[in-house]
Length: 267
Picture 1: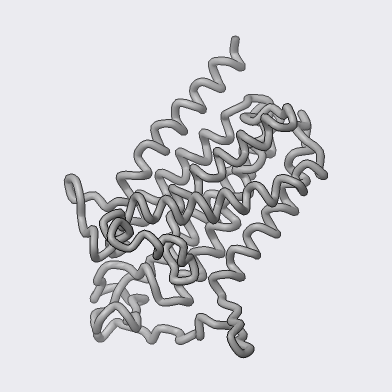
Picture 2: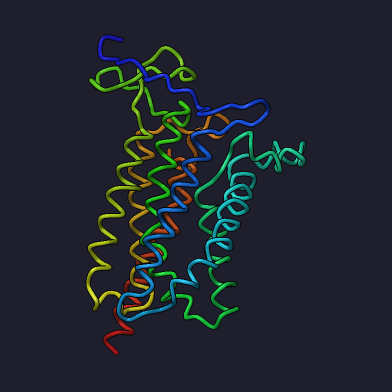
C-alpha cells in the first residue's frame, strides 16, 4: 500500500435530471463517433479519393448501429454466453454495461460492407480510410473505463503509480485502462496517420486495414498483460486472456492483408 495513489473519484454520471442520466461512457461513444466522422470526411477525399464527404455523413448511422449491435452481441457470445442463455432478455439491457471491441469490430465490418455494396463503393479502399479514425473512439472508451473504475489492472504493489480501485479490493493495481488508452488510442492513431500520409500506402487497398488489425492486435495483447482478466473467465489457454486470444486472429489477418496489398501493388 506504500506505493498506491488515490483513485480520482469521478462520478460516472455527468448530469442527472430526474430519470434522465448522462454518463461519461455514453459521452465517450458520442465523442469518438463525432470526431471520427469529421476526420473521416477528410480522409476519404485524399488522393486517390474513395468516396465523398456526404457519403461519410450517411455512413455514420450504419457504423453506429454496427458498433452498438456488434459490441453487445460480441460481449454476450464471447464473454458471458452461459449467463445470457439463462437470462436472454438481459442481452438487451445495454445500459447495464458490457460491450466487446471484437464484436463491435465485426459489426462495423459488416455495416461497412453492406453500405459500400449498396452504393457501389470499393469497400476495402473505403475501410482503409475509416480504420484510421477508429483509435479516436478507443481512446475515449478507455478513458471512460477509467472514470467508471472498471476493467482495472493486475495487482502491482511495487509500481509507484498503482491505484486502489473502488471495486478492485484493497490491493494497488495497474491503471491498465490508461495504458490501453495510450496503446490502442494514441499510439495506434499516430502510426496509422503516419502511414496514411503516404500516397503510395493509400493507393494499396487493404494495407491500412491490415495495419489497423495488426496494430490493434499487438496493442491489445500487450495491454492484457497488465489488465486483470474478467472474474468469470480468468486465464484461459496457456495463461492467455480472452482479449489476447481474440486478438491473435486480428494480428494474423492484418499481417496477411498488408502482405497481400503489397504483392498486388507490385503486380
